[in-house]
Length: 337
Image (spheres, helix red, strand yellow):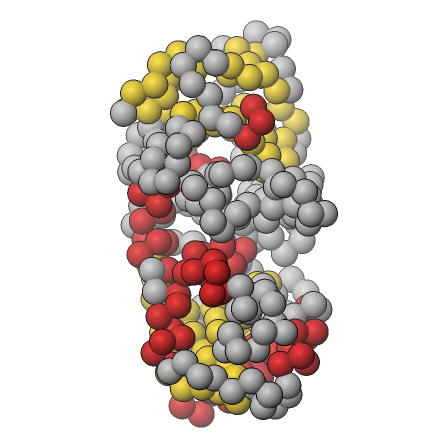
């Protein structure tokens, strides 16, 4: 049930994961640079600015079950960019412009910063540059001139921040670095309500349950294959909550060459502690749909299922039999079984 990618746009949830994206296991080193502008000089100290992303390392270690250890390595000096902030607000709208912004900041830091062994570059822009409203991810690699080369290291992943870092908090960076890992946007590029409700920071960084989905964790090799059940007939199983380590984390039914139905268990634990809608959630992953247009969508009106409740999608009926602290026992009935 490891479906292939059909709508890869630099990010995508099919298998295998692109080798151009950030290494998802082991030690990963991320350079964090600080940028201000001729018309927007920084007023925070470098230490205060870097503190805005404090919590990122712990988040990734927790949600990866210890498989990914991010080290943020700051260059604690403001780098004065060559143009006013509006230039960079426009630059992030194109692949080349965004790459150029990161390259300029890295070039300013390079005399005093060793990029040897760096896997990703994050550039934090002073929030005084209000014209830079949001901070996106740059994904290189498969495109012409697709890497930034510094100190002999070819870097194909980068992030820049905008004013939105002030209201998203540190989870802004795990959202953007989620793209560096190849995770897709689940919010709606056309301005709709999004596709997963309160589940996943790839939909809403302020979500009550911002932890990544089981499918994303499997995609990133944070789950072993035996923790994901590939179901091809009627089946009953108990799923352990995604927020805790160990156990079976997902049941997957392949319903097309690019489409699967996934069931996982969510509890008000860990980074999902604000979740009020606990239970089993059923969602569809469709790798033929591009990021931002619904490649992952939670069924049942984006709500979890309680015991006795069921939902049917693509001929797959999922019923919750029992819910305990240990997880959700579900029954899967297939139309043709």
